[in-house]
Length: 85
Image (cartoon, rainbow, N blue to C red; front, side):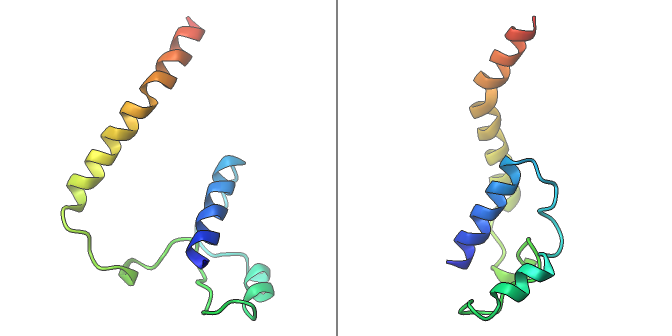
């Protein structure tokens, strides 16, 4: 549940173009919710690097993901270019 809450929070912050999704979580928020959380709340937006085991072939996967994003966004970007011409 905590991962879902944090994930949706990050999506919402991105959607409203709020740049405050890096670094520490707001202290007042942590204080308000710490007693209701079943586990200790993480103090940062990003997960600690040692939380998960290393991903095999990470560079290749990252590159493939970037290519997929470019393919997915191509129609949108092409449409915007044709509207400005």
